[in-house]
Every structure is written in structure tokens, then in C-alpha cells.
Amino acid sequence: MQLNYYQREDQVLLAVDCIIFGFDKKNLKVLLIKRNFEPEKGKWSLIGGFLKKNENLDEAAARVLETLTGLNDIYLEQLHTYSKIDRDPGQRTISVAYYALINVDSHQFDGIQIDSAKWFKLKEAPDLIFDHNEMVEKAMARLRRKAMTKPIGFELLPEKFTMRQLQNLYESILGKKLDKRNFINKINSLDVLIKLDEKDMTVSKKGAYLYVFDKDKYEKKVEEEGFSFKL
Amino acid sequence: MQLNYYQREDQVLLAVDCIIFGFDKKNLKVLLIKRNFEPEKGKWSLIGGFLKKNENLDEAAARVLETLTGLNDIYLEQLHTYSKIDRDPGQRTISVAYYALINVDSHQFDGIQIDSAKWFKLKEAPDLIFDHNEMVEKAMARLRRKAMTKPIGFELLPEKFTMRQLQNLYESILGKKLDKRNFINKINSLDVLIKLDEKDMTVSKKGAYLYVFDKDKYEKKVEEEGFSFKL
DNA sequence: CCAAAAGTGTTCTCGATACACCCATGG
DNA sequence: CCATGGGTGTATCGAGAACACTTTTGG
Image 1 (cartoon, chains in turn cyan, red, yellow, orange):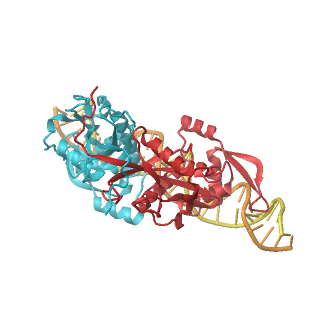
Image 2: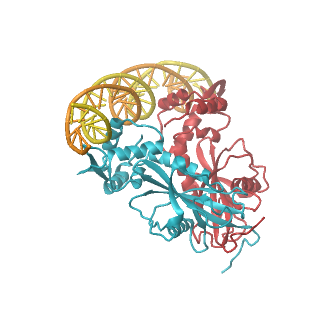
Image 3: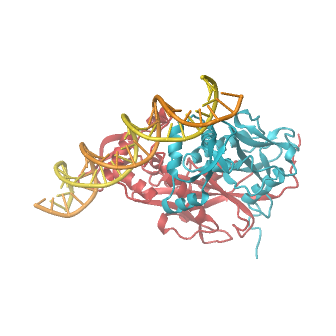
């Protein structure tokens, strides 16, 4: 077996950075971490780390996320690869950005680094190191696009949720108000929610019915009919 | 100034691979190259090369493309980054895929390697090395998606083209027949084409009017109205 | 009893689709 | 004169958007 055909080529450091979106009843949030090493120590950044020789990028992203926050079994999707020459002043580094949607309540931080990771409302997030602001922007654009064609939002909600919460979520993602009746009609016509007998009494006196996402039904629809929708 | 903060991290080779789509009157094509070095010497592959220390990925993709085919000033868009551990048996290599659309007629190959690069009809393309087939698949999916919302096809056509050619192109990309009248109505309603007095007499006895894409008008529309369409 | 949120249908408009015939001309 | 591709308009349907009032109950 022959190795090292490409010996004369330059090698580089490959990083992964994770944009983790969460939704907490009312606001879309992003998970950030305070950097505890140079350069830019003490500043806020995305959750990141370096690719190792024995893993692919998807695995690296999952490992980095779990190591820093304890979050595991999260579906991460590759976003874009950033390669500006001076993006990291410490050393030439190329970074592959990943993003994920998680439900804040049902994923507790049991990881070792819980102290340094913190949720920020998107609009109140601090300035980030390097090109991380740009990454968040792009992830947000991607999220918006996906939200308009896939029922993506359910990953961000607790298992049981009210129509109002779902609508709030979509309004956060799309950045605009939606008509309540049209929204509910649209969602109902998709026929992928199960209405429970249970009500959420924490917000109004009347109480609001809780729903759960019927994932099996959704997946069957995707196969059979090529599910799609527009908001 | 301090350097090398990350000394203990693994370094890797970073490659770029370019999926170049072209359209030649009737068929959607992809540009491939016969590999003249190991491993997999003699097999067909995408146009690829390695990132150098003094350039970013966009620049690397443009340089590789120009070096191997003479094509320059091509707009390349980043597609996805591939990182399976054994994707390149020669050495651990991560590859960033780029794709571009070009008009076959107006971009001649004046490059040094003209002999080894060849256009293939998409359906007749040979098996490619490594994960290059997967890359082409993904690029094609992206192309289809973009074609449905952006007037992307004009980059693949000669400056002057007939409605029939435009329709052929969209049918190739979307992989289905479209209704002639509906297609023309839709395109006309976009109001971004200029109808010339000139006719193309090469196909029919009657001749078909030629059109040109009004790029300025299109860009003004994008700014002012947020241009969008559906096919 | 009233404030605050929940729940519920109809109408209108516009874009998408389906569809068929005449025209011009080179051979 | 006819085969071949070019060019044109209308009717129908369905999805999206606009829109307002009644219900419930904790305080």
C-alpha cells in the first residue's frame, strides 16, 4: 500500500463551529460559550473545536458539542465552510459551520462545561469572535428558508405545545406577524398534529389545547406524497 | 505577536472539487477530467486541486479551474464539504465542493490541459473516483432547487437564445416536460427578457425570435421588489 | 363583571395548470 | 403542398391573504 501521494501540498487546521438554536416559549435563542483559551480568551463564541484524524466532520461537530455542553444525540446539519485567510488570527484555520435546532426544556445541560455555555436571545446576542457573527447570520437565513417548506419547527418545541407557541415560533423565525386563523388552518390542513384532551393553563384563564407532532404520520406523508407546504 | 496556539491539533489536506455544468442546445452536461496522477490515475474525476496557504477556498476553486481548463472569471458557488475518512485512499483529505454554470459556446477552452477535460451528458457520464458521483448528485439537486426560484438558467445559455432553447434547458434541469404556452407566459410575466428583431433560422423554416437576458432590469427588480418565481 | 387569551369560517384574488389551433417557410 | 417547428389566449381550480366576533374564566 502506498501512502502520501500529496506530500508537497499544504496542510491546514480544520475546525467545526456549531450554531445551536433553541426556542424558549417566546424567543428564538442561540447557544454561546465564553472562550477560555487564547486567542480572544474571554470573548463569546460559537461552540467549536478541531477535526481529529479519526473522525469525519459530522462526528467532530457532535463530539465538540457534547464535550462542551453535554448535549448529545442532536441532529447537526452542515452549513458552510469558512476560509478567509485571517479569519482566526492565531493560525490559519478553516472552519466548517454546523447548525442544529433543539428544544431548550427537554435538553438539560449535564455536561462538564455547563457554566460557560449560555443561551442568548438572538437580538441580544453579543458580538462574537472571528467570523462567527456571519455564521449565525447564514444559519438564520437557512433556518428561515427551511421553515417555509418543512415542518422544521417541531424540533424546537417541547413535546406538547399549544398553537400559540407554534405560531410564536414561526413568527420568530420568519420575523413577522402571522394571522392566527390562517396559521391554524394551514397547520391543520397539513394533518400532522395530534390534538390532546389536555390543556395548558399557565397562560390564559381559558386554557389552550396541547398538541403533539405525529412524526410517524409526517414521515409516511413525506414518502407517499412528497409533503410540502408554504407559509 | 503570538502564533501557533493550536499546535497540538491535527492538520489535514484540504481539496476543492468543481462541478461545472454546461448546456449545449439540447443537453445538460458536466465537465470531467482524466486524472493524470495517482491514486486512481486514468479514471475520470471532477476538476480538483488543493488549497494553498495563501488563498481562501473560493480563490482555490477558481485557480484550480483555470489551471486545468483555462476557464476563468466563472462564478463558483460553494456546495458542501466532504470528509469521510477513507474518501481518498491516497491520504486523509477533506474536500470542499464548488459548482458553476457556464455557457459552453462562449467559454472556449484555451487552457493548457484542454485535452484531458471533456464534456459529458449528465446521463452518460462515467463513474467517477472517490465520492465525486455523490458531489454531482448534490450539485444537481441544488441546481434544480435554485432553478425553481431564480432565473439561474441564463448563465447556461448563449447571450442570444430562443424560447425553445430556454425551455429545453429548464426541462433538462427539472427533468420533466413543460407546457410551451404556460412556460412562455410565465417567462414573459417576469419581464426580464428583451426580444430581438433577429431570428434563429438554424432549426425551423419559420425561424424563432432571439432573446437576451436583461441583467440590469433583473437586478433592479431583485432590489426593489424581491424578485421571485416558481416553475 | 371584565380583561385577556382561545377558538372559529368565509370571501376574494391571483397564480398555476390544462388545453388546440393557425402561421410561416424550405424542401 | 406539406411537414416541421413557431407562435398565441382562455377557462378552471386551488392556495394564500384578508378579515371580526364569540367563548371562557380567574381575578
